[in-house]
Length: 109
Image (tube, rainbow, N blue to C red; front, top):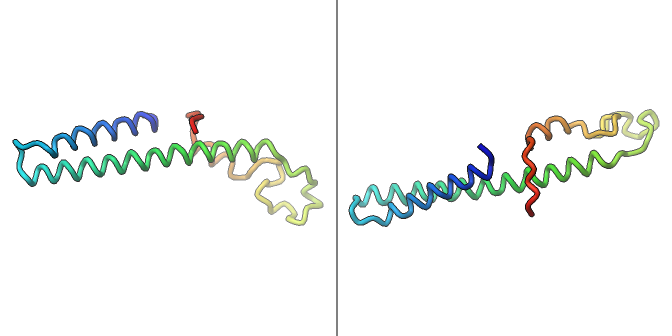
């Protein structure tokens, strides 16, 4: 399931339970439960939207880091190989970030 599919699903569930929470044929306890469940799914959808945006921004940051190198000889650098570029002109967290953001390409703003 993609993030977009999860967002859609959470919104869909929230809408169904919001409608159910207004039903007159169910008990007050059930109405309150449905309203709570709807609110929880709305919150989940919002968190997923934020995650999607964070992944997109992290992907852009990763690309910017990989497109720029420090152009210094690590042996003469004041950081002496202890910089985050790890002497390979690549961000040392690059593989971890790539695994986190995955293959999804979310180009929306």
